[in-house]
Length: 231
Image (cartoon, rainbow, N blue to C red; front, side, top):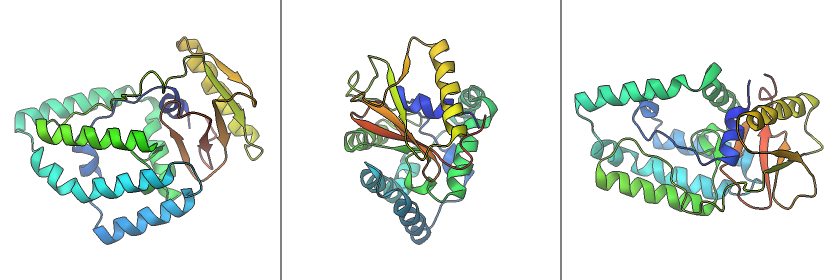
C-alpha cells in the first residue's frame, strides 16, 4: 500500500468532504456499539499524544450526528451535484489508497478512535473542527473544508525532518523513503533524515496506519503497522 496519503496529512492541511457519503457507506453504529468500538481503539492508541483529545471529539460528533444530518438535508438536485463532486474527488486518490488505509485500520480495530479513520488531532485542531461543524450547521452547508487557523505554524516551512524508531521494519523504512522521494520530486518540500531535529516525524511500527495533521511541534509519530509497509 502506498503511504503518500499519510505523508500528505503530515505536512499539509487536509481538505475533507463533510458530506453524507461516509455516513451512508456504513450502517450507523448504535450508541453502545460505538462506545465499545471507540474504547477498544482508544486502548490501543491511548499512549499516543492527542489520542484522548481525538476520542473526545469523536464522542461529541457521534452525539450530534443525527442533528447534523437533519439540518443538512440536501435537495435532489444538490444531491446529484454533490455526488458528482465526490466521484471527481475520489478519482484523484490513486490505487484506492484511502480505502486500503481504512480497511487496515478497521481490521486493527483502531479506525473508530481516529478522526476520518487515520488521523490524530491536537486539542487546537479539535476546537477548529468543532467550530467548522457549528458553521456548517448555521449555513446548511454539506461540503466542508478543514481550515487551519494556526497556519502557517503547522506547515513544515524548513522542510520535513524524519527519523525511524528502533521497531521500524526495513520494509517500512524503504516504503517511507520511496514516498518521501516521490513527494519531494513533485513539490518544493525537502525531506531530511535527522534524529536530532527538534521538529520531526518519527516513523514507528504501531497498530494500523495513522499520522497527525500538519506539524504539531516536537517529535510526532507516523505509524506504519502491519499491512502499511508495502507499495
